[in-house]
Length: 128
Image (cartoon, rainbow, N blue to C red; front, side):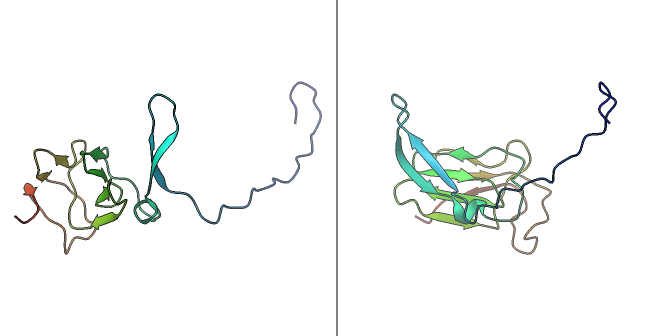
């Protein structure tokens, strides 16, 4: 009922927009002066999953974007390749911390990939 007019209104059926078949998951690098897209990095492999984002922010280094969707995901800024590491994640709020070469992981209560995940404080670095 429309309270102001006291009359019953007929509602039309909802019209649904067809679901987009493929979403364009990507990180864009913009020119700060013009706003033009200078780089495009696909993140489909990272974000096209049925999982929530971790409880900490994504991070970046000069060589990688590190997302925190389901695990630690590296997006290589030179090649655009995605590397997924299910066994590595950080705790709430601080999360992971790339600093001076290593990637530092903190304690976390996550139960995903419980058989393979690292538990404890870690400083991970490439083999020399």
